[in-house]
Length: 409
Image (cartoon, rainbow, N blue to C red; front, side):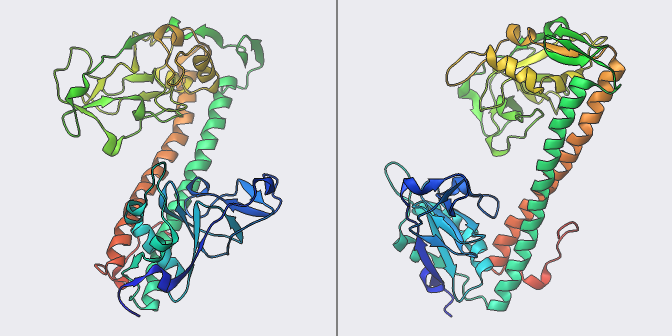
């Protein structure tokens, strides 16, 4: 086999075609119907709708590629499926299927660059057929070994994703139970915010703290590097907690007004819903005098530490009840906003002692640490996958030299 061949030389291509809309259903009648990247998962697509009158079919084991808005994303087909115009089925022939799948992942950015169109990007069958498969000349046994290694790391990534998903659901359930029932197995009493333990009080958040508005930093001083990071709602997880912005981090290089540099463990709240689910989310500042307090965030100040634990308050901000109340009084049609007055007016149930508050916060933080450990492992494995994908496919690293880290299945 030539060292440089085209995709059509090593695979059969089936371009999708949308069936009549009258044949769509969501009750499982017919074959799974995939339309594009929105149906894709980490490795396999998830059926959202089904089709009784398929026009074009993908078979079990086919590589599925998104060929319309966006272009180049890939998944593997679990079983016979109907594919619409946004999908191409690639059926390997004369090349290891998994090796080809990973090779297409390696050149995904290049494939995306081939897309064209006034409204959305797309590539046609001819463009797909002419994709260069530069590593097709690697002997088949070597292809299988490379694919096995990459599959092993990919399964390890998926295992961490399942741990994150399961532990996140556990955390939500635990938060709801502990922040509405407590730890003391007390009888419940009915209140205006629902049932809470008898010893708890219903109080407005404003009884315990003030909220300081941030500063409107001038955008002309934003840079990709610098000493000070502009903290924004993008630094918050929807369920609460700090999120590293990575390459999206904004640095501020202009003059900084007094008292707008945040301290480590300051508690801040998203006052603007930069994306769905962020309004009212809270996070602790991770470093001292590194992050700047901008106008889209509220800083908790003058907290009555004799009555309310900061760690407990962090979790209160992430209660579904509080988020609903904040959303009800928010303003803005496209981007929602809240204010210190509205946020402080929300009523919540408060345990009578700091000891119980901290016990609840500690129980919840245990699941947060598990999520953090799994997230770090996932990140490390993703970095490993990207390195191996490049090094193995370009023969910069040989299969026999691979020693996978402990923890990969």
